[in-house]
Image (tube, rainbow, N blue to C red):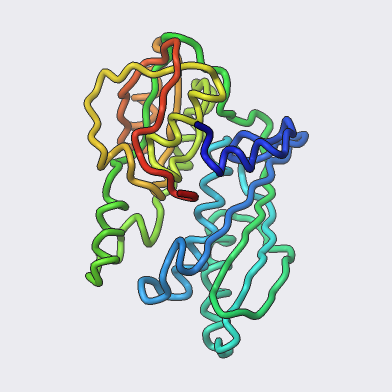
Length: 274
């Protein structure tokens, strides 16, 4: 049965919808929400870390599409109690990301409220965007990095315990060097935001294909959300080239499945709607 998120998206049947961003000409438009009480608690992160991560999760979409960020618009609901030092700390997180990834913040909107909620619109550029479609039977599926740590750290935070400051939950480790070099040899790609299994199910629906796993992955790996690693698909003949690029960019990668006929269903619970 179709989940509520997919149903709602299906009510807007535009051909630009379905990838990590909407491709219009050589521009890629993406948007992400980062909301207090849903994606973070203020007790877990500094205001600078919150603002910085809100940018990174959107930049992750651009990278996954082989696009480079150019401009950002910030929509933000700021608690009325915030003082000027807190506002400055927030701005430092946004500006840190724009400097690191070489894009400009060109506007947005602000409103006062009870919680800190951030909406980022990113405008990126790509002459050869990497989409989620194009899978064929026999293609090989892989992912970057190590999956599972974010879910474990989130569990610790909910228990009131501390996590390491270099946790991927605090600061996602985007794999731009790998993706930009590997893109010419990839069939499809997307970032892993809702868990590997859930994002695999999205590829499955879009391509009307299934996956045969040749590597055993437990639910810790399959269901850990907010990893912001890259899920990618390539031709079997290009696997060695992808491995070489991974070594050149010091990027761990794991090949774990082959594309088949059929349909793959996520083994994880829904992240957005019950």
